[in-house]
Image (cartoon, rainbow, N blue to C red; front, side, top):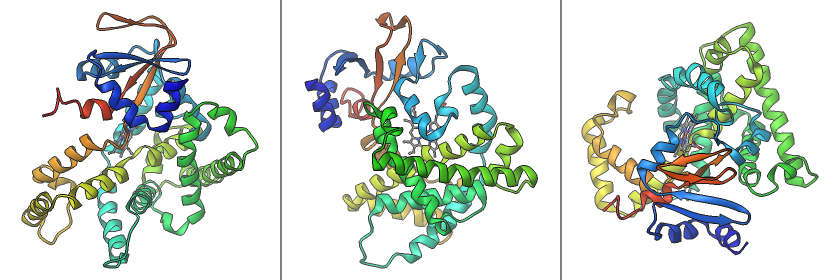
Length: 331
Ligand code: HEM
């Protein structure tokens, strides 16, 4: 219980302590949950590239079903692969988001005033959501503040849904539970209405592409919400700007590359290869401040990893925070 309290108070400090452990698979317990932290990239690859569903499962992540109602990240095995290959992959390659992103970011930047403080994380988050929303629907999320609020409520709920008693709390009488249930109902109604419109008359947007490929409206709804919820780019941008602001030399080099490759024009996806220094900046930011610092799988049967047995019911923990800052891997 002490470990659980220490982890809850400051998970990153707790993980720093586990990184010091000499072993590559570090056992630890949080309350009555037995965990095994994988530190080496080889072990991470073995678990992440495994098709062993079961005995690997999503475990507690399934609590997010209360908000999402199914979808790629809450399915396993064949159905997961179907959704990945038929719904996500074709749309991830869709170039419209990049063009929408450039236009919306430029517009938002013009509304910022020199010297005026900006709370970057929430500003960039609403910008990213509005870019996704326009790619998904062709519509402007800035004009639907009640839907932005609903999305914010769902995102806030992820924190407590994953914690102890999360699913019980979802159905309970607490004001945050009532608000989040209402937010889900509001967002779902809007998505379902747009889905019905596109079934009648397809448009040139991502939602229409899903409707064309998927008969089940519930899967379309969950995919839509996961598209909005999955992207962590706002956190990446926030940390990257923070790091650049602390290092004038790197910032100047970055600007020089942008000037050289782009000049006055906006970037397109074709420029990504040429922006070699920009890519290094982004990767180093992802290494130091990974927007998601940990995730897990639960074992539901006999599981052996690199000859070591991980018992039924135990949790396999993986942490970008730990592995990215391992001095044995990164000088
Ligand atoms: C810097 C940005 C991002 C970070 C740090 C990030 C992080 C992650 C992590 C750690 C996972 C693994 C979760 C797990 O297996 O338990 C994941 C999965 C996933 N991410 Fe991202 N993500 C980012 C951007 C995006 C974007 C832009 C999208 C698409 C809109 C996206 C869609 C997904 C999907 C669909 C999965 C599930 C894949 C699967 O289970 O097959 N992510 N992401």
